[in-house]
Length: 81
Image (cartoon, rainbow, N blue to C red):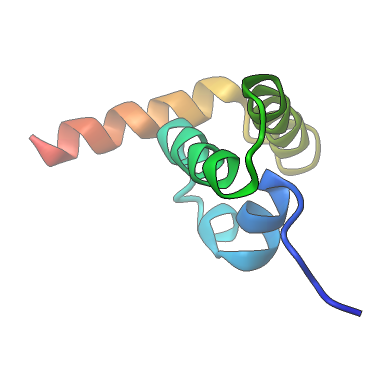
């Protein structure tokens, strides 16, 4: 049995500590999704579905909603300037 990445959630929840540490942001989600889409030749529709599914799972099971992810992105932008 091999453990391959098939979904965006595989990377975010099982291959990194981003979700556990609270460092995950919307910007990171979209960048990682873009990398996976390129690597796995996902369509734009598939990429958007993966992002949507991940955000739903973050909200439902971890209490992290889209607004929180976007706020984390903005906070990171402010810290970079």
